[in-house]
Image (cartoon, rainbow, N blue to C red; front, side):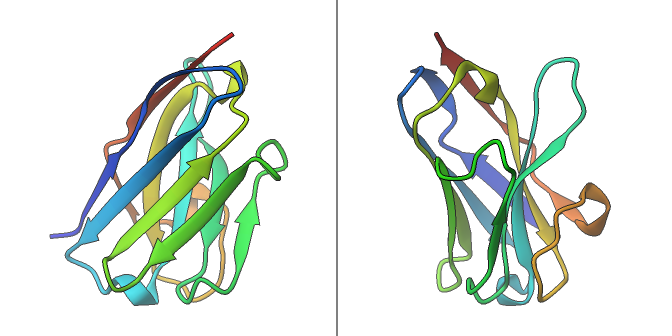
Length: 124
């Protein structure tokens, strides 16, 4: 059974930082592209960042470029999202997801497995 478990969410003031982590089990982690998505209240789930199976390629939503960094540790089956210079508009539930592809993908439909999400609240 595939499990993706996010951690690291919380409340932070604007300008602050948080690091989200996702621990994966039940899948061959190093053959999956990993992604982070988020969903704000009343809005659709949106792409945030993704990293290829090897870690050699990454992609980011324009809204987070230069502020967020995605990285993975295939030895530990973890993927993380370092979030700096947080803004109130970053407030959302953040989801970790896995796609059985070798290349970076950014659409929800290309991800087969999802975590339960972790809440991030950024106050002004």
